[in-house]
Image 1: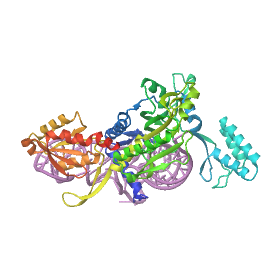
Image 2 (image 1 turned 90 degrees about the vertical axis):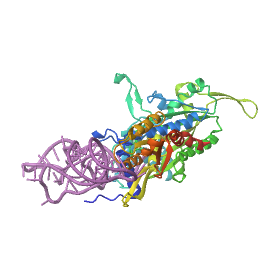
Image 3 (image 1 turned 180 degrees about the horizontal axis):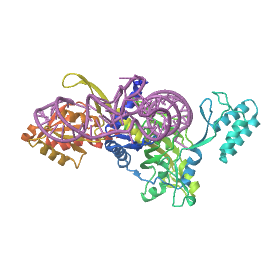
Image 4 (image 1 turned 180 degrees about the vertical axis):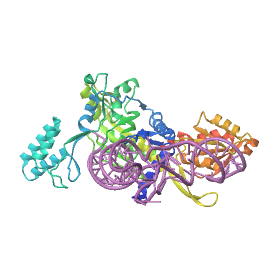
Length: 501
RNA sequence: GCGGGAGUAGCUCAGCUGGUAGAGCGCGACCUUGCCAAGGUCGAGGUCGCGGGUUCGAACCCCGUCUCCCGCUCCA
């Protein structure tokens, strides 16, 4: 039997990347020996190096290269009121209902609101308003059965099947919850944070005061977040456990638009500096804004399955700090000593916030799919073959260089190992002597190692080695003493970050 | 959660009308070799996703279930 043809080349590209990621130790399905866990993945030996490099590069760009941005690492567990204040408890769940005939799913509240709008359009304002009021009361009381009864009572039918054969109304809360404390009945429900941002907002004053931070300033954080997505798909693009790299920039009210523009441009440049081509990046401006935002734009990358968000830049106004002030009863304000146009201090205010938020796993997938390269060429016998390699920017490659003795005797291994010993404290380098040297080159191509260093008989005479470049497969003969500076120059974060200024 | 497709060795797959599993590549050891997936010898690795059922006998037929991919739905 024939394997079904892939629907399109883009789908098979994703398939190839998933297979490659698994086969060469980048990403494994979680708990695979138990059949895996839906939408959860583990990073393997090379994946973790790549991801760590991406995080380090982001961290450097956001904190150390900005005098006024510092980092925090907040706990995943937070006081339950945090999520009341942020709006996630009320706004992060939806009542859903399915029609059994058409198999279509709807938001139950939307169905009823549409019906109300229908009445109003027909001129029956009272009946429409009455319906809305009843819905509001049911939602307030979390009476899902009541919502369903209301749908039946109003004889609301599925627009597709035209029937009223409905399932129960179910609440899909996107936050994971658990209990804190040893005794469950006494315990409070604790949520796993659905975003890292709140860990920054609740520490705004701690950092501002202990760091003597002056507005405008930022707080950066890298950490895990959790969302119980109804549907998690597309490999590591949408996972239930994922990692965010985000920075909240606190600004004087009224200046948020200029800072929004600033970060929008800065962040896009960062992705380009990393090697994501400009042609594969685009803006997506949000038409419908989240409850906290006054401007929002995504940076989208062209994944094998189309343009999708890798980073969001949001102007969050003072929504979060103001809300935390209300719930915590602690003033979240800042005294601004700078003088306004009238020569008077700006004084007390709750800062506005501009947020940049990258999905670390999405960035990983973007970098991996961008790096995946198939080159048509010929093998040593002149037969056509495909050379597959991962074209990572050297600064983020899991392994920076592999050192090979040309043969496994005559003192070449010892010479090669001495080079390894000299370089390993500065770079992630490996030594390999098994198999023919051509195969060793290929193995390094497959995991994206940018440089291979070969020790041959000439090395014993004059201390020179060949350095072979992954992308071109070309070789150059250099002195051993030059290796540190050649590799160091290529893999330095500076090569990436200097493009930002 | 619904619909469609898939699950056999690390990877890609073969396995006929049911008769208790194979190939290529890869992997490990050794020999030979020495610059782009070389050759030879030997070897490891699979309760055919899992659980039931039918049958003398199931990778294959039936039922259930899990996971992945695609399309819906949802997405702060």
